[in-house]
Amino acid sequence: MGESVGRGCAFCEIIEGKRSAHVVLDAPDVMAFLDARPLFKGHTLLVPRAHFETLTDLPADFLGPFFGHAQRLAGAMESALGAAGSFVAMNNRISQSVPHLHVHVVPRNRKDGLRGFFWPRQKYESDAEAAAYASRLSEALSDPA
Image 1 (tube, rainbow, N blue to C red):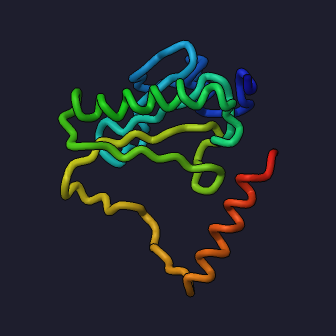
Image 2: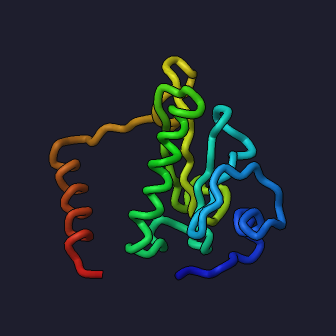
């Protein structure tokens, strides 16, 4: 399973106790801690203890357990913080400020100022263009890799 430690990785340093963090969950396979620059108070980062850079690097047999922890954190946003819901997100490489897989679990409330996704939406030029994108992705998923 992945590297035990990523060289120079801030999240691995937190896991090893070499860098401080406000720990929310300390389990054998994952750790969760408050984001140092939260969108809202309680914004938590969930990371696997083993160093994986992106979601595609995470072993398939760990997907369920890993996202089970994310599910529990999302529930805690409501039960412990009184949030109306949560935003659960992950970046892979682009906008991934630390190259260690992490899921953001952010408490949400109506009219909290966070407007859906943070980027502008686009439109397909035509239904044919949308169909071509769907076909390319579908073909990639059907190829045994």
